[in-house]
Image 1: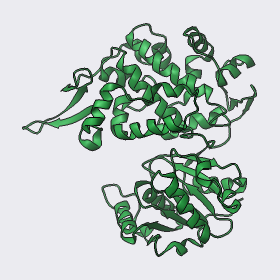
Image 2 (image 1 turned 90 degrees about the vertical axis):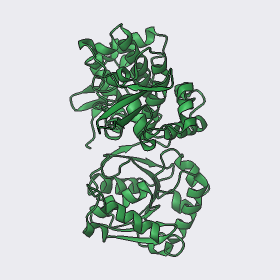
Image 3 (image 1 turned 90 degrees about the horizontal axis):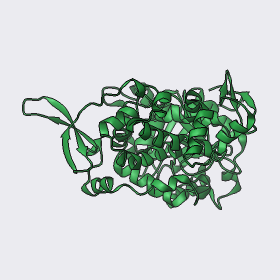
Image 4 (image 1 turned 180 degrees about the vertical axis):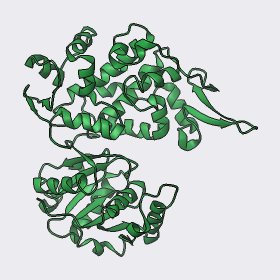
Length: 432
C-alpha cells in the first residue's frame, strides 16, 4: 500500500483548479489553493459553495486555504501532491514548475492538468528529481461530476508515484482512472475530438438535417442525447477550433485525423460572428421565448445561415440500434457508417500508441464522454469481422487492434471477463 495523500496543493483557481481543490476537500484532506491573488482563490471557494447544487459543504470549504503565488508559495512545502491547473501555455507551466520545484518536499507528486500539451514539453531539461515525480492528472469538467481522470506518466516517472496517485484518485476521490500515454490529447480527447471534428465535415455533405444527425448520433449509437451539434454547442465552437489548432501542431504527420482539422466554411462563418454555442445564447441551436412566455427551440440552418423552427427527427426501426443502422443502405445508414466507421477504425489504429490496451480506451470514452460503450465494445456489438469486411471494402486499411483480432482468429475483443491484448491473447480485465 502506497503512502496516503493527506495534504494537497492546487495552483490555479479557475474552473478546473477550483473543482479539483473542492473534490480533494470533499475527501477530507487539507488543501492549499493558490492563484495570482488570494482574493481570486477565496472567490473560487465561495463559488464552490454556491448555487442550487454546491460542490462542497461549508465544513469542507474550511479545509481549503486560499493564498497567493506571490506571497504563499512556501505554504506548499508539506504537500504530498501538487496539482497545477493554470492556462494552457507551456512556457507559463514550465516557469511555474520551476518555482514549485524549489519548495516541494522529497517524494511529493507533481502533476499538470493539461489537456493538450505533451508532458515531455513541460519537464524537458528539468531536474531529475522533478522528472521522477511528475505526471499528468487530466480531469474532465465538471470535476465533481465527471468520473474520468487520465493518468499519464513521463518517461522517467517512478511507478510508485503513479500508484500513489491512482490509489487516491480511485479510492477516496472515487474517480475512474485511465492510464494513458504521453501523446497529443491523450485518449478521450484524441478520439472524441476526432469524432466531433470529422462529424462536422461528414454531416455537411450527408444531406441530412441537423436534427436527424443528432438523433442518429445519440441513442441508436449509445451516445448522449446532445448528439453531435448539441455537444459542440455545450463545449463551444471556439473551444473546438482551439482543439483543432492544437491537433494541427501536434498530431503525427500521417495521422488520419489531420483530414478534419480545418473547420467547414459554415462553422467558420459562425466563429467569425461570435455564434459559439450555449455560452453566447445560441450556436447550432437556441432557445427562444415568445412575448407570451412560450419557449421553443430553433435550429441554425447551415446552408442558408438563418434560424428556423426545430423539427424533431423521426427515425424508423432500422435506425434504432447500432448494428442495423450501420448496415442500412439509406441516407441515415450511410452517414452513420461514414462517421462511426472512421471513428472506430481510427480508435483501432491508435492502440498501442495512446494506450497499452483496449480497456483503457473504452473506459476513457465511457467515463469521459458518457458513451454507453467504448469503441471496442461497439465493434463487438456490430460484429468485428463483418465491420472489417465492409471497412476494407471501402478502401480502408484494417490495422491496429482490428488486425490483431483478425490475425488471432478470435471473434470478439471481449470474452467474459477477459479482453484481447496486443499480443492476440485474452487477458483478465483489471479492476476499476
